[in-house]
Length: 456
Image (cartoon, rainbow, N blue to C red; front, side):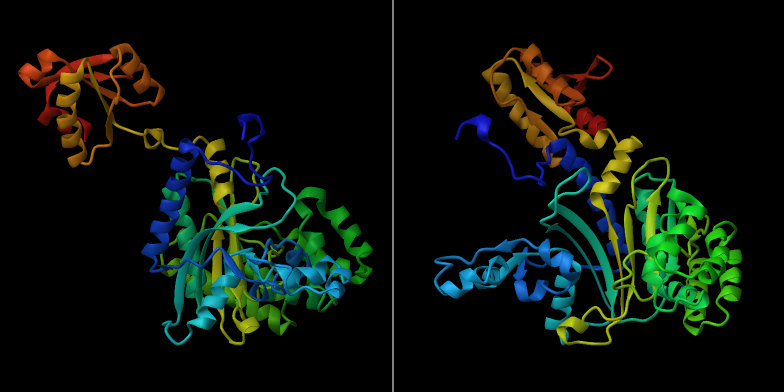
């Protein structure tokens, strides 16, 4: 195959060494914090049975599933009538497996299959790629990583509070100082719909008020009317739409009053109060946490708290989100399992850190030192130096071929290797080596022991 017609499918990417080092920086930071909070690692296979995947993501989600053709003669069991029935009917006959669409459904399947071995509450984290047959566009890919953590089998709101702690620690570890954790509760949204006389219509209500930042109050009220909300309901909703300012305590007091006739709404407020109480006990600062009664992500499955994180100083959407769901495993025949989950968006965090110039430079260096040599004899002597450096845990390499010193120094410069150790006949005789600091252009003569000390 000639080079000019090589390529990769749309919506997937190669990650070169620089990107991989940066991605690994993010992932290892997230993973360490998950482990600190006693979450255990889990991996599930790239492919699942189609029966596990279909019907879990709504009709739209079903269309975005990547199917895998059965191996061997996949048409063996297909009759002419199946062909006539069309692509949808056919797909079930020739593709019984598919690539996973998210990490939540495989996690639910795992919990149900292993319910007798698992200790509940079960805390797990999972960092793996997922696949969606979406139309690729900027920031949306067909293959991307999800970094999920869930705790299942507990109703305690300490779980929600700990996730807010995890968010603070992960972002602090990555150097992202300016961020907001928005929090709401699904029951509050239900209560608002009840309080304005539009019970059961919280989804329509939320779709409209979600645009408040972008289009302003008047246009949101107009859209509510277009969606069939009465003038009376729109007027009753106005205090909620204009109560965005103030402290979290003030907002809670406002909601308590506004929702005084909605039992569900008040339960949501009480849950939020309890979370804030735990945050104080856990010593998590409240300055970055914002109660936002219009926050409405994941309405189809969240039943309690809803969380979303945005970074300041950049025009990038949310970098993570999650919430409480009451019935994760119900679709697989194990009802009544409540859980809370949170997911970090790796690609979005990467974009934020790149935009804010937060990636540490030194972590992008492949080696700390290069051993350069003048001839075959000094090359052989250099091998002893390199093995000593590696024994001491110093990332290092030796130039593998015989070449002019200038070429070897160029190689170090191109790879951003900060130190070059020169080995010639004089160095071999005295046991003191010329060490060149590539950024400053200075050099000094050091023994091997001193080199190890300096590089460490």
